[in-house]
Structure formats: C-alpha cells, structure tokens
Length: 381
Image (cartoon, rainbow, N blue to C red; front, side, top):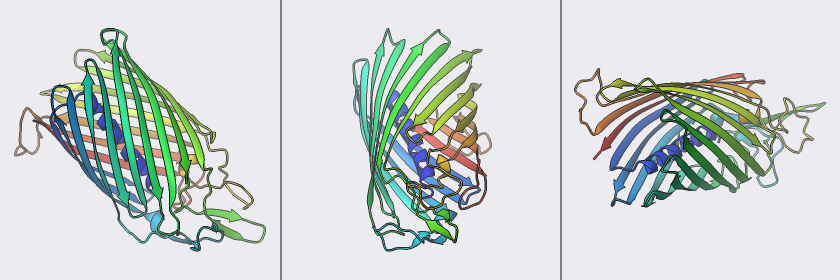
C-alpha cells in the first residue's frame, strides 16, 4: 500500500474530470495515457477511457474504464517485524512479491437537468490484489441571480477493503466527503469561487507495507505502524479567475487545511492560461504547500507510544508543483495525425518536489522529486 497516495491523487483527478463533464455534457469520447515516476522508486502507468452520451436534452450518461500498473520499491523490500498484532502470525513488513501491481477501475453515472438545476450521480469500483474500493459521487448544481451565482453541493462516499499480501486479515476503510461550493460573477472579467469540504475517515488508516524502527536501551526493533482509527479532515479554499487582455486569464487560489490529527496546511496556487490561435489553449501553473506534522509523529520511537508512523504525508513538509498543459486541434509535428473540428489533442506535464524534515523510512531521502504526464485525445460526436 506504499503507493496508495499516488492512487488517491489519480482518483481525485478522475472525480474532477467527472464533475467537469457534468457541467458541460456532450457526446464525447476521451482516451488518455498518463504516467507517474519519482526518485523513491514508484512508477505508475495508467491508460483510461471515458464515454459520455447525451440521451436527450435533459439527460446524459457516462462510462469510464481505467487500468494502472504500479511498481514500488518499498513494497518489494522485506523487513522482519518484531512486534506484530495478535490478528496475524506473519512477521514481515514490506515484501509484496507482486512486482508490478495492476489496478482495474470501472465506473459510470448519469446527469439530469431540471430546468436550470442539475444533479448527477456516479459510481466507481476498483480492485487490485491487496485493495478494493467502491465509490459513489454525486453533486447538485443550483444557479441563482440570473446565473451570476451558482451553488454546488457534493458528496463522495468510498467503502474500501484492505487486505495486504503480508497479512492474514481483511479490514475496512470508510471515507465520506461533503462539499459546498459557491461561484460568483464579480465583474464581466472576474469570477470568484469559494469551497469548503468536510471528510470523515474510519477504519484501518495506516499503511502496513511501511515499517517503524523502534529504539530501546538494548535493541533496535521493527514494528508495524499504528494510526488512530478515525480522522476528520476539513478544508476551505478561495479562487479568483480574472480575464486579462482578450484571450487570456490568470487564476489565484488559496486553501487552508486542518484535521484532528493536528495536521495544518497552507496552499497557494496561480495559473495562467491563454489562447494561442486555431483553438490552441496553453496553461502554466505553480502551486506551493506547507504543512505541520501529525500529533503522534516522532523522529524516533521507544516502543511505549500508542501510535507510531513513518508516513511522509504525516510529517512536516513543504512542496512545490509546476504544471504545463496545452490542448490543440492538430499535432504540429506529426502532420499525419487526423484533423477534425470535433477532435482535440491534450498534453499536460507536472514537476513536483516534496521536502520533509526527516528522511523517508525506505529511501532515506528527505526530498521527493516526481514527474507526471498526461496525453489525451478527445472526440465530440
């Protein structure tokens, strides 16, 4: 499960694209090839396909399929675990012997408009050799004030099963997220968005492919991580979109995050987008994030603590994310690519850096460098 962070990021991106599709439903076929790699030894390749079909003027349906292959160095390593729970007789940490883990995800949903209002519901199921997830996502959109103000109400509910290859048990993880968003046209050139989300997580919230080193006066031991079995996470964000010149826009955003594990985070982002002519759109963005550590995270443990972790997402950290994306109706280099008014090519690349105050438990590095790309083709019919 050391790569589950990557899978969560992928899920968030998928949910975001579903919401975009809900707000502008058309007959559309989308195919993407995405990839992720970092200097901690994680590599992910995931092609995905989606189809949206307009049933009538008020209703559309969609379907989605994704498969990804994950390779993680930390999951392949073997560590003897001295203190294991009574629920298992296995004494290894790490040691997943599936070198390239495959995850399959299927999904579908529908959107219906009630005059100016609209509602949507989507379902996704994903499975891999040590994890399964069933997710429902829905939203309701209510325009007001001659469509100058729009309210979005959303929810995401995930019911997951965790069954690590190195353990004899199967445990539940239940996550529910509720969100409210307001969009306001301030001027003909400026649009403001405010978002609040509330997330509850219950069940097995630790990663049993990770190993905690415990130092005692007489020995050095390896133990399983132990996290609280519940967590409440909240976030509030504001984003301003301002149109400049005749074909460009700039976006500024701020997000504050807090939870009952005492992790607090500040995120600042900016994005510049411009039309380059011939229906070409280019965007360049920068995002920075700084967070505090969880209340139970320590650099060293003596074995008497109630909770123990080496999860980098629970450490004090700073991150930097640089994004470049472009969409265009034809490929300028490969002239043999098909050209059609209904066809659009898309490319995105992200460079990401995360720096933590203490080294990673497996790679022994303080800094993570990651690269993510996406190549897509969209066809509207």
